[in-house]
Image 1 (tube, one colour):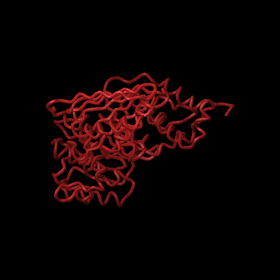
Image 2: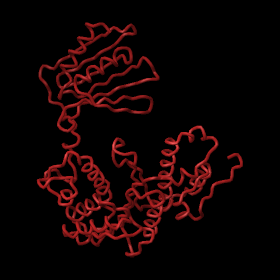
Image 3: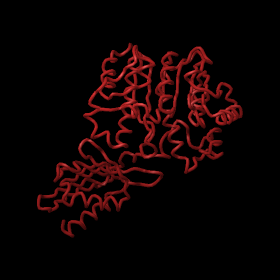
Image 4: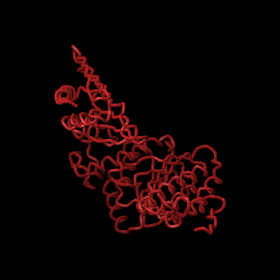
Length: 397
């Protein structure tokens, strides 16, 4: 790219990369194996204007945020031999850039005589309409150090605030499955410090007016004692915490919803099985530490892949949660696997949401074949399916 052309591209970038930008699409790759297309859009991120680039490479998408000057340099680099076409739309006008095979730029600019106000820039973080509102003090969030007494979110705890609201969005989706005319019993196993347990009670009872009883179970007595003190302080008389394991808990005769967050390894399986036997209408589970299948999984065909410990661990975790979802489908639950929180915060970002609805899925044969292929065992299959699935013997392994 000649310096004169580069200077003109920089000038256009400085003119059009502002809050009036609608979109930029850069395409027509010189190398089909690399980046095939880039989309750029403006965002207000924590009150600052940035430009998010989405790079498409094969079937994957990669995202990165830039300042205006960084984005201009990034676009220069893309058009300097990697991609050959750019379409820019803004309230200020349109720009079209074509790059010949010899690297010569053709730039056409059409400016608006009157600037049209574009759609508002998408706002992230503090600009989002959360279910728990900023500026409205929530006692348990204040005590847990997420919010000030004036309702302002503590900057270092903003990720926790987002996580709590994301979890409540999953709750909001299943409200039609809860009863308006009788008390709903909810079991939260592995409640820990109970950010989400208190949030669930506050949202369902205080904000939505549901009659509920929430029982938090955990194996740490000190956590249970602290949570009960907080519940009493807030007047949450239908929120109680007990020391115990969901697999052996018998304190209620019916349960409407079971929540299990980061129950370690097979503890998730026992929680899911207990939820099914209770006939719970809703199950929300964020599994953790899926070691069982990782320990037993063997497959000669996959040996070159399984030799890498990190890859094996992640594949075992994904296989485990997918099979758990299929087993729940087998038990009459319509099941989704959803992203709970961003991957940048934790790799444990899968939530299994199951709603009891419709008939049982006839998929036991497929589940058996997958486990036999992997030479693996899964506790949930032994707890819920008609017969425990045992791996086939394989003399070659």
